[in-house]
Image (cartoon, rainbow, N blue to C red):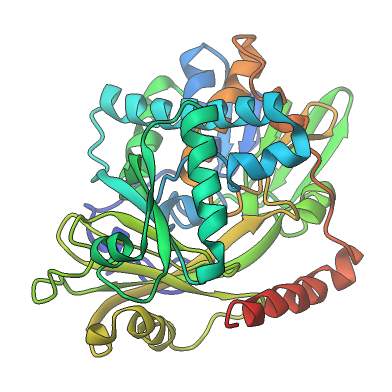
Length: 428
């Protein structure tokens, strides 16, 4: 029987296309460790792998099963750079810091490919990323961003697409222009996550599923993590829960907000070869972004409905199908075989959140929909910061990421109002 995540609706196509997920035991009793990690996604598992590989005692706990969070259920798109185009970041931070952040993301991309190759993980990688504009007025901005990335940031893989090329490559006349990136692509994230968890375990990390952290407190120079079945005592702690922080730690909760995102998978598009003929991944220019891609077996994976409330829709498929039909009218009756959702962690400026929230307790998350590369690399960088190998994580720790306004009581309602407003603007 298929496992239904208790924290995210629907059975994902990813889950149905892997062999039975390896199971890890729940924590049974108290435990002492050098580094404790809360969260079994890409960030936490990469940190666990590298720490264990370096001989550091590390214990990782996951509140549900490995893969139940965003790392095992996301859109699978890698992207390039940070969440915003580098010329936009440059306006705020200057060229030097913007270039350093762009290079960090490129290092993250290379690291991800190298890690998968080293560990023999077939993550269904397919090349190509198209970013397409749903408004004609964005053409100048798209052209300028491409010029900046190619000429000033030394990235030769991106080009501007006019309306004709955009229509041909997307297989839709819905968009006015776009960019084409041949230096990135998309993956099956759960296959990567399963391979990563195995690598961490084989390196000697203690991995425990179905073990939620109930509280964090500090005493006598130690950080104590209370779980339902025991207490973990650690010298250092990494909080890598991202959108699933809830009330565990208030500083992270104030800076990283969960929003719901939903994905549908269709039957293979054998009768519709005109839809994304190059099998690239796509994302559009809406503030409430829509993202879609072709899988290795020719299915359309479409993520396009975000909800800013705590509730998931009763029928995910119907919402997804309507948005597919806006772009591909010929697919209005296409069968959707799987529909699922989960939470994405966002920050106010859409920049990653990396901060010491208590002495010896680091929190990393808030990748804002751009986390497949960055989350993996940030886990490695955290481990490197512990073992003294590099200080590259400081580039993210130095970013100004303000808390969401409204405090604990009004934060979610204010976010709902703000993002609903931007969603309405997308229509005009």
